[in-house]
Image 1: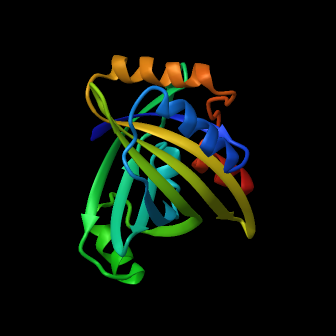
Image 2: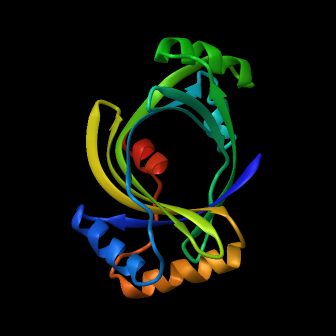
Length: 193
């Protein structure tokens, strides 16, 4: 498993994206934005293997490509979330084939869909003494027959030293009036079931 480090801020509207981007531009040069359409399907097994072991089992479709991700539980300290994750790039070209292909990587193969997240994501890349991605997420959670729209800002360390990344995130946090997200997309979806 690789280790993922990221800060997340809860946004109320897309206007918060502009406020964050303004604060970011005062501290770093952001690359051109990339727009991505993402659909995430989260699974658990009939025996609840993944939820009981605090593992998120996610199949992501992004730009006609599929990635299976297994993520451990997040540890959040001072707004910085860290967790182990393992990604498997799948060769499948449609969702049905991807669901079959992903089974080879799963310890418990008797899986069922529990919820979905459909996301319109805008991504900025920054390079300083570290590399990071800033993601503005405008997404819908579909869980338990209910649908909920949310907004979130995510800044993920891609390369470099964690302490420099942390200090940079705290400098941005000091310039904006947004709170760190306290609940993840997964926990929000599970509370809707």
